[in-house]
Image 1 (cartoon, one colour):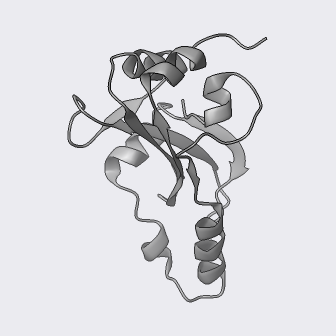
Image 2 (cartoon, rainbow, N blue to C red; image 1 turned 30 degrees about the vertical axis):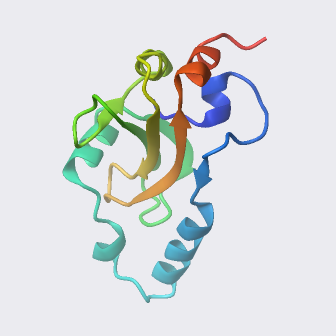
Amino acid sequence: MAFNPRGVRGGVSSSLPGEIDYRLTRKSVISEFKKGRLARHEVCDAHPELVRAARNNVGEESSEPCPICEEANVVLVSYVFGPGMPAHGKCVATREELARLGRDGDELACYVVEVCPKCSWNHLARTFLVTPSRSRRRSAPSA
């Protein structure tokens, strides 16, 4: 399951400090591809582990079709990095898992990547921080 800060917190509010959204970069890459300035192999180059996660439902399937092949919906795959995590990060499958990791006391960085399981399009969608205090609030149910 992929995470966005508002969804993990359970409410609808403004962005968290430290959240970076890459929509403008995504739009630029897609535009360059559609104009023929980028080849398909340059934008459909997801790491095999990202594609595996997307194909095996480790991420959250979106309702948005792939902007490159338009044959499948993109899947949002989340990885966390920080102290005590493997060097390659840890793929997080649920909100509960993210909250549990966040309660361990170290600040973590969460990277949400959109991946097409069909053509291997991938793009970093957003990053945000998970801190111990925020993690506890995120795991609380929304009112």
